[in-house]
Image (tube, rainbow, N blue to C red; front, side, top):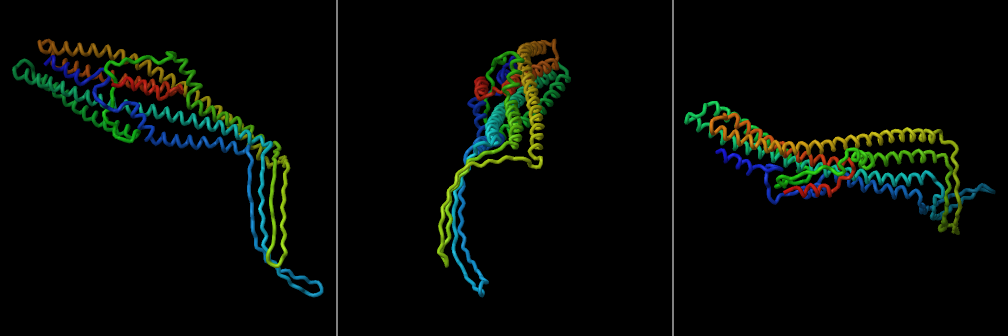
Length: 442
């Protein structure tokens, strides 16, 4: 029996995870499904398409406007003359006409500023979509890792229950032959019942985690690939927390969003102050009007005009000055929001970097502890057989081994998640980073 338990554990567990699933879906497949299904990402994609329309809208203020106006009117006029006796006449005729007009701005500074703002609005929309894409990568990977960990937890509970069941049977046999007390049997039975309760909780947690992943990818996940046994994780490059903080403060998607908003606010001041400036437009028109029919002989005329139109504002009830002050205040707000975004990005980068560093250290420590726990179990198992160890010692050693394996798997997955968050904080997270992690799956 001493040899059966380690062999059973080795068959159920692996260094990177406890569940071996062949031909399963990998991380990239899950991400592609999330791109096609996730509602938050679809919303961000539609928002990007809407944001890109800001550019042609801003450009329209610099281009000419052309309009056509036409009319046709039936006229019925009764006229009474009071000269040398009253006389009455009735005139009926149709009047019609059309006019084509063109206006080309020559100097409207506020329109030019609005165009530069539209370019920044597009940049903001692109950054917002980049943030949504990075968020989707992190969410899809985290949901994937959560399912893996839940599967590992369930498999651990099941394997531990089998191991304790074997120990329980051994305790019962030893009690029957008089080499052990009933206490050993009770201890093994209590540990078995506890593990069974943990198995039920783990199975429920796995169901919940699978539903979370399903909400991201739109279908029931089947046979997710786990980490390769004995996979080695490497430190982030560059291996300098200060460089990651610097990248986050300048390249983070959230910082880029608020940077664009700040630039838009700066230009809004210039745009509002342009309300004091004169405007100059080129105007042109071409039209025709006429009347005829009924009791009149009718007429027909054509006209064309072209020229410059100058408008100089003098006073608008104080509205322009008020909008100027408002724009200045909003610029100060945008500057504060930008600074807050930089500080938040720096904090996120520091936390993620420390999470990766701590995770790598934990993985190394748990790997060493795993070897020690296996040796401790083997020693306690042998000691129990020769009578120098009691049953509770073996049960504790088994629990320690399973707990160490579980924590090792969790540390590895948490470290990979922290690495993705670190790259997201620095604004450099992309599909290639996900593919690199995908290569670690078996």
